[in-house]
Image (cartoon, rainbow, N blue to C red):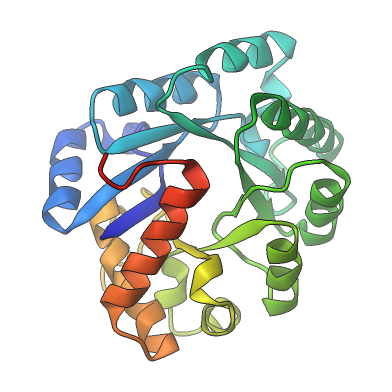
Amino acid sequence: MLIDSHAHLEMKEFNPDREDVIKRARQAGVSHIITVGTNLALSRKALALARGHENIYATIGVHPHDVARNDSKTFDELREIARDPKVVAYGEIGLDYFRNISPREKQIEMFSRQLELAEELKLPVIIHDREAHEQTLRMVKSSSVRRGVFHCFSGDYSMAVQCIDLGFYISIPGVVTYNKANTIQDVAKRVPLSSLLLETDAPYLTPEPHRGKRNEPSFIINTAKKVAQIKDLPWEEVADATSRNTLNLFGIKASE
């Protein structure tokens, strides 16, 4: 079993061949894909896609890049679509101090509001944290959310331990396959399999040997094999364990 715990199949990059991408994933042995909303419109598209495919599930939320353009009405609408059984998590939400597309004050305000909404909806949370480690951890700790994943994890092992202690999984992206990605490789080596998920973040962060191309869920096997190499384990063991973790986090039955 192999699962892509975080992709963005609803994005425009997949408009030309979305169904072919989904078919290739299935042929590569990917049993489930979680497609992740990043604003209200894309959350709706993610849900529509999930409704049309038995093995695809959706998440909803507003990415830190987009929070400057949303208001209380946005949250009311997200609250409404969260009722659909195909919605399995809230996110991705968080802080991005690398690009600062939305003002930091707005990011902090909306991250706090969305953590509260996720708790109200009783959904696990998908955290986006880019160059905002301390602030992100501080806000998660001060919230009552204790179930979720730090996606595309970019911290060190010490931070990973803090996230796990809070009840979160650590998600390993294709970056782990890059030659100079020493920090995430160290995290992948030292964090137990019981706390790891695998993701593509497609269409972004394409793993080797496909780097330079658009990423897609079928490439998750390259990440699984790299983590297995780092841990000196059979890749099938890594795939099975991380897939079980994904199903557990998002409340998906293996038979579905």
